[in-house]
Image: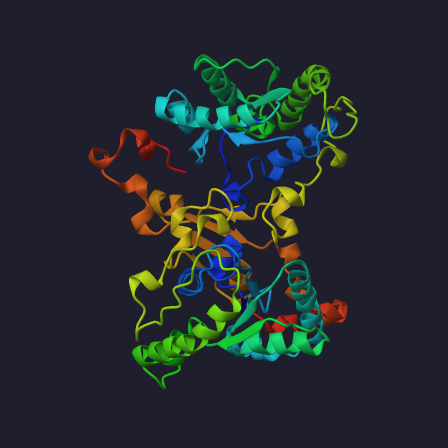
Length: 238
Length: 238
């Protein structure tokens, strides 16, 4: 699974594909019968400034050489049945890797990026609903080839096609084992809990603010609703 | 190694004992010949609001029961030669654990907390230099017993006593293997890079802001000083 670049939240959790993109991708892997036999990497280790920032650097040879080291290490130590590239920049990175002289005999599926609906509709030429429909049709097209290629799935794949919109069942949470021990559950959800803040671009670039979502602020629960396990928790304000 | 509670930075790195306290502790472990055969846990999983917040909860039975589960798991799955408790709350927690009916046949060293000099001098009854001298004398007293007890160190222990102030050699960085892969080097230093921010106590409690230290903002390096590997990095502001 080759992704574009980390979101702000992913710089904290240190797993590629968190939040909305992560849940959509996890659902796709689930349809392929993959619950743990996958690896996710980014085209760019560090966040790029929008698609433009990615386009500006996709031909950078030193970045490609560094990325190819990672891809070689992954492909050299694992029996990869398939590589899925999410979006055009990841597909470019895959092709650059092949151009470096590598032979990959597994299956390659180039599909639309999981947040294509949001970025395409924000650009104004398609509605969110239509872009979602297009994304899911595109993913449906890729499902049979992937199911056929993945000969050792973790469990029998359903391969079931998506409908025309994401359902709750299409969006499983990120598995806790994919994140460092002790990571709170809300860090595995699609909530916006991390942001870059600052008065100028340099400060913003250097800053990540993590905020516990309101619904997860258990210390605000009225004492009458608390279990004995949280007795007195409110006093421990810090 | 039983510590009091996590600092803000430790809620991000997910290793107990980071920053200044971490470097001092790592130096102590080094003198004992321990480079990897240690485990660090907190008396409180979540940050307490100063020593007062800790004192208020040290007798909480449900917290103690939960902590004892962790201590039992650690002691039950490892051959512990010694337990070091850092500060009075950690020592209370150790005693509570023994009171639960556990037998620990290894060595126990109760020593001053690594940031005792800062907290004691902030309270105003001793200078930072004198408090540091007292801390190091206290640690020196504990060294021979610990060296004798730790029968399988990772490397031969020096056991060398500290002087009257910390030297640079006394403050090794946190080993990279102790933190999630990809953690930047400045997260293993004693710099203040994480803080709670907010206009009121509840917001502050729910917020952690991570800021790249100025010296680590490589994108601000003038282009003439950059290696080719960072070519064009400045454009990737995000």
